[in-house]
Image 1: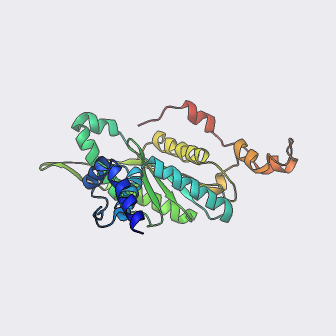
Image 2: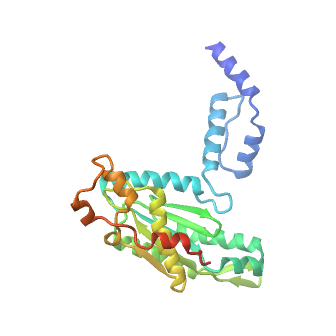
Image 3: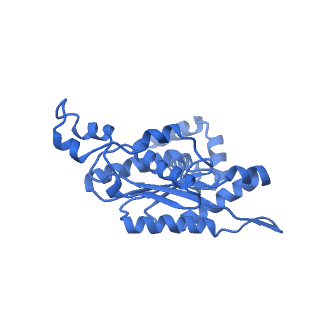
Length: 264
């Protein structure tokens, strides 16, 4: 036992952990035990802290895109196995470039932080809110039925619109956001990219229809795409039975989305 303890201590001393420790101390993410008292506990704390830090957006404290993608994959798998509905919301701040150009990027950061807090207050503990990139946020809502999903999406939109964000002692600003959402196809092993594409298409629709609104692709409006058909039936035969064609189809407008430019 003494030999094992000595070898562990020597290995810990040989590791270059100063930068990792400084990063965790700066983030105030975890309280690490003393390396002298518990070498194994100290090392485990550093590993756990770095793992958690790698999944967080440093500006807003929300999950980052890496975390979002992992949750999205798990949710798709759950929908395929259980059939429970799951909703993906994509939110984009309207005219955010105008905020940065007028007030500066520091104010833009304040706006993003305020919006992140507002979104987090609108969802359940089981839901995942992430900063997808730039001024775009994503929300994954598992076990989310249509009436609840529409209510939450509108609640988020209204919460952002109602924000009064102080940027100086004498100045406040207000912003709005557009929200697009899509339900994952039930009992279908879809892909994260297809699900995101559907939600992004609705976000584009919300932008082009005037911004500061919610557009959702409801479950009954979802069609199985060619890629999803291949995932479902590709192993059965080279040709498709006629009944498959009768109940499946392509995602309307998906190719148009790729060609269209995002409207801020």
